[in-house]
Image (cartoon, rainbow, N blue to C red; front, side, top):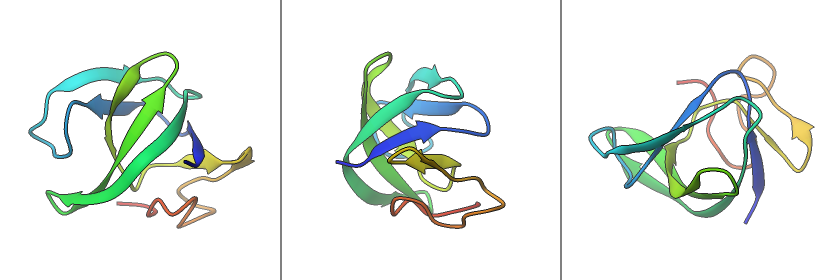
Length: 88
């Protein structure tokens, strides 16, 4: 899958897609992950299954600032990156 990097803040990694799912960990700014699957729609958001070296596997909501393939994207400069929707 595509490689992504968390930018612009932290990202909750959950055990399933959806806001009610348990938070497994909080990925810090600069954390890297590989997209395994998604998007899956839950609670009006697109969710992606991620595999990380530091946090294991889990689900995260799209619409957050990420970078793909070492090209940095931000909420303000890129509404879409790597197929992950932009600002929410």
